[in-house]
Structures are given as C-alpha cells and as structure tokens.
Length: 282
Image 1 (tube, rainbow, N blue to C red):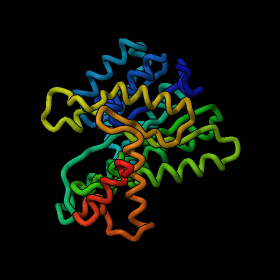
Image 2 (cartoon, helix red, strand yellow; image 1 turned 90 degrees about the vertical axis):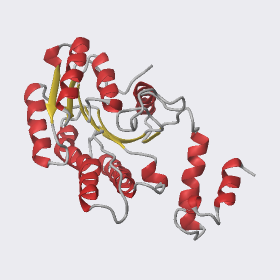
Image 3 (cartoon, rainbow, N blue to C red; image 1 turned 90 degrees about the horizontal axis):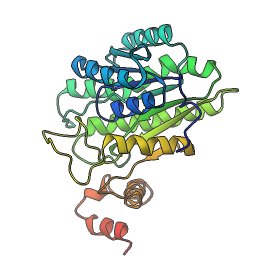
Image 4 (cartoon, rainbow, N blue to C red; image 1 turned 180 degrees about the horizontal axis):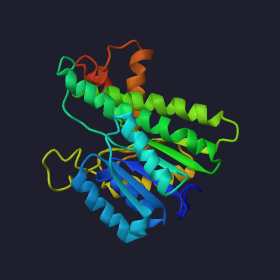
C-alpha cells in the first residue's frame, strides 16, 4: 500500500489516547513504518505496556510514552516540549483521546464538563499547541482528529458525547479550510469517523469481539488508505453497516432540516416507516 508522504521512516508521530484501542493500533502502525512515536494517555499502566510494545518495533530510543490529560492545556504544552526536545519536528498529530461516560440532557454537569473537555477540548488543545509548528516547518504533515458517526447522526442516548463529537467535526472542517489557505502550508487535516470498533471504550464489559465489529487494526488500515487517497472524511464501514447505509442515515439526518421534520425523526414513531423506506430504497 502506498502511503502519505508524511508517513516515512524517522518522521515523528504523536498519538493521544495512544495506550489502547484505535490510538495504540495507529501508534503501532506508525512504529512499524520506522517512525519515531510519542504516545500520550492518562492510563499509566496501559501506557507503560504500550510503550514497551512500540519499543520492540522501532527501538526504545524512538519511543516516548507520557502521561497526559489532554483537557489540560498546560499538559499538552509539556508534551510538545518533551516531543520536540527529543525528536524535533512533528509530522503526524492524531488527536484521538476520548471518553464515553453515560450522559443525559439533565444529567450531572460534571459528566458534561468532562466529556466536552476531553473529547472536544483535547482536540482543540492538541491542534493549537502542535499545529503552528507543523505548518511552519514546511514538510508534509497530517493532523487526524477522531470523530464519530454519533457526531453526525446524533442518536438519542448520550447527548454529551454527541455534542463533543459534532464539535470535533466542525472544528476539523474549519481547520482544513484554514490550512489549505495558508501559503506554503503542507499540513492537511482529516476527520476519522470510525464504525463499530471493539476497543476498551466500547467493550462495555464484553471480553470477546462481537461479530459485526472491526478491530482497531482494521480501522487504522482503512485510515491509512484514506490518508493516501487524500480523503478528508475517512468514513469507516464495519461488519454491520455498509457505507451505503451510513450515507443514507446521514442524508436523512440533514433532511430533517430541509424537510422541516422533527429533530431526530429517524427515532420518531410518526416517521419510522418513512425512514425505513428511505434506507431500503422503497
């Protein structure tokens, strides 16, 4: 597989939420390419174990594992200082750290505050801290932000998570617009939109991967293909949902505005049959 020109040996990649799941799979893929890799996470034990695995691939001298709370800007600045001090220029930033506690519209304020601070604030912090230097060095570079289909179709059930991921989508779109209009800038932004992936975040007590779920490694392979193709929206299918179905669900969600339907009409009893007909093509 041909890869994006930023993904070459000795270049530097940073992955937040890099100790497990999609983040660790990405860090392992980058290390496998001979890149120098920094992973940040707030799970110290998982971080140590992940760092040891990466060291077997690219050498301990080419791995940095650091405990970071991405919602705290000063800790992201400390990560930047550590990475640039040890490795120099940054070529890949993957803002992937995320949490998914249960939330409700009238649920605890602390849950909303924490979810927005990590899932959206962490992306803003990472981009604002690392982005200017990446743009300034003039070499091909990538900023990949992990979004979610829930930030596009916004299903009922976890509004704080949906709001945060919707914010990541809007932020990343604005970021790419700004980058492409910066003279001489060779940084591109991309929105990774995973499907159903079996990770510690989604396991919910399960120990075996459900049949319809992708592995983190499958998701990262798809991401790398999308980056090479220059895709901004890297919309991942999975074993349960095809791209065609995803497209229809997203089109219906936008159609609520155009057709002046009630919000979230896909889950409204008066529109259930119409939605099913739309998806099936009847």
